[in-house]
Each structure stands twice: as structure tokens, then as C-alpha cells.
Image (cartoon, rainbow, N blue to C red):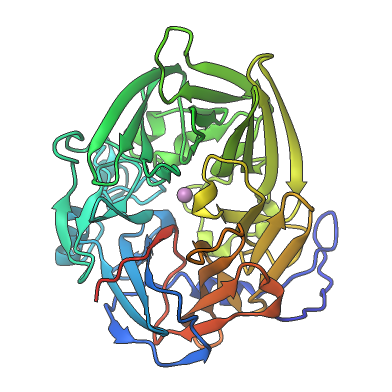
Length: 494
Ligand code: CO
């Protein structure tokens, strides 16, 4: 926890405090080409002895292919990080997901595929025109489910990994329930009955949304398709006991520049600010004709991640992180020189959806810029009180994520733990303390990139009291490039 005094900085409209240097932030986007396997011996504080299990994290490990910088980190090959907590000790291991594309480019020593977020093959227009092959990079999330470790990427099937060694075994099709190259999102939700619910988006003139329900043994119990009008760019969704909820951001997609090889697929997506966002509500257990899909409208905005949803009488309450505008990567721009002031912050909103009156109201929960929300897994789809996110150090403006933020939705109280000025935080994962019923009794674990020594720290916070400082900081011998998502399992694979 640091106490930074705001420094004055003049921008176009207002003076915003700054908590970082762009050079420090950029360094967290260096590739990590080494694969490590060691017990962590440099620890500040004490690992709680009750903390027992494995944290798996996924994210881009390669930000360049043989020195050729990728235009967007989301195009980087997935690297799994595994931190095992056992008897007050911790072990670290990392390994790349050996996808077909990763292996081919490693062998060739150059970029062979186009990426969703801007990567083009060398050779300009002629090399890229009508090449619709996109590399499966398996870089977005990693879950242990049905005794299988799965690396997820939303546009294709999961990769199956060995949880002990992190070696890539192949693709996972859930006993033939998924077909080759079939999409399976990186944002599954696990309900409190132990069912994993996930979705897939198949674009077209009409979009097909597929909803999968998989039991604890890893068996596909249900797979249903729904058609919705228009183009959908949906990264995350929500579940309650009765519903799956999707927000269809008002975007249009002009595929021509992508087909012609001029732009990446994501560069062809534009937010339509003056069109409403659509909320698609699909019953999970429809039994009668009355149980139909409902589509309601709310004001425009862009949502990558949702926090949670729950049902209260005839209303659905949905908490999400909304952006006023969508930051796109323009061709020939360099994300490492992002001017954060020019991008809109992601802010927490609550949507109250009245299902009988077809009415939606939205309300700002907090103006701080946040990302990567999480909650106690025992409250998924149910009423809840506490949410946690990665966040900016200051509560105004936009900046890199440097803090962990807690909101008490009942009292309105907030807590913050900050790694500024030289630390940069990732997604927090909440691990409930065994046999405790208090919703915030547990730990938050996050990976912090520390620009001071160019290494990453695994930070354990007491979720009840972030402001007392870290319970333990595990100093790794290496850095982990800024990651995406991960998950915790009480199982040990040593
Ligand atoms: Co995500």
C-alpha cells in the first residue's frame, strides 16, 4: 500500500493525477519465452496454511514472434501459469499451450497466421487477401473441470492440458458433443448446483448463440441453439437460476477490409453509439412455449465483462463493467503507446431489468476505472454483497490497472489496495475460506507485474480487509506478461 500524492498533469480538459510511468507499464508487455518450474523461496509475509490448492492463470506469453512485435497483446500465444499452495509453501510453473499455430510459428521463426486483433502476415495485402485462417491461440482462460485442465479461447474448441506438467494433450470435444473448430467461450460460469454453463457465438446474418451445460464429471448435459437478429460481439455472459443473460453491444461489422486483407476482424467492428444495447434473456430450463427468449433494450455502451446477476421477484439485477466507447486498434498504431486519457474508463453499472414491464434501468455504481471483476463463487447467479475488481490507483480518469478494489454493495463502503507507482495488477481470484459462511471471508490472489525488478509477484490479500496490506507477497524469479483470466481449484498437482 503506497500513499501517492496526486501529481498535476495537464490534459485537454482537466488535470488528472498520474500514478505510473508509461515506460514502466510497457515493460509488462515483454514476451516470456522461458518455461520455469521451481519452489518460490522469496516470500514477504506468510502464506496462510489453510490456503491449499492450485491457481491456474492464462494470458499471452509471446508478444513478439522472433522480434516482430504483435500489434495487439490479445493476439499473443497462450501461456499457462500454475501456482500451487500446499502446507504454507508455494510452487511455480509455466508452459506455453502448444497449439498447432504456436508450434508452426516456433519452427518457422516468423508470423504465419493472421490474428483477430490486428496481426497480419508479413508481405502486405497480397499475403493476407482472402486468407481467413486465424490462429487458435488458447490464451484467454484456464479451468479445471470434470478432472480436465482446459485452456479456453472464445472462437474455437478448448485445448486439453496435463495439470501436473502443463503439457498439451490435444483438443477437448466433450465426448463428441463439440465439433472441430466449434466455438466454446472463455467465460464459463459455474452455478451453485455444480453445473458449468458456457456459450458460443456463431456470427452470420442472424447470430446463433449456443448454450452448453456440463456437469461435474465433464459430461455435456445440454446443448441448445438460439437465433438472434444482427451481428453479435459477445465476450462474457451471466447466469441466474432460471436464465442466461447476454448483452448485445450495438456494433456493426463490415467484413470487407478483413476479407481484403487490409484489416483484422476486430478492426472491422465499430460501436454504434446512438443505437441501443440489447439484453437477450434466455430461459435455462424452458418447459413450455411461454418460456421464450426475451430481448429488451437499454442505452448504448460496450461491455466485455459482467460481475454477477440475480433474480428478485419479476426483476433481474445485473452488474457489469461498461465503456462509453470501444477502443479499437487502428492499423499501424502501437498499443504500447496507448494514451489512456483518450480511452473511456470501464465503470461499474447496475441494470435493473423488469421482465413483466419490459423495462430496464441503469445506474452507475462507481466512477473508478475497473476491469476483471470477481465475486465469491458461492454467490454466482444469486443475491450477493461484495464484488472485487482490478482498478486504477486513483478514482478518476483512465490509467493502467494498479490496484485491487472491493465494493460493499449493501453499505456502499469501498476498500482499495494499491501496487502503484511501479506495480500493475491483474485479475483478482477470490478463494473462500473453507467452512466459513461470511461472504467476504477468504483471499484474493492477483499477479502483479513489478517494474522495479522486472519480475512478477503473486499477492495474497485478506478479502475482508484489503487496506491492512498483503498477507503474503510471493516474489517470482521471472515476469509474467499481463495476463487475462484464471481460476482456482482446491486440488493439488505436484
Ligand atoms: Co474476458
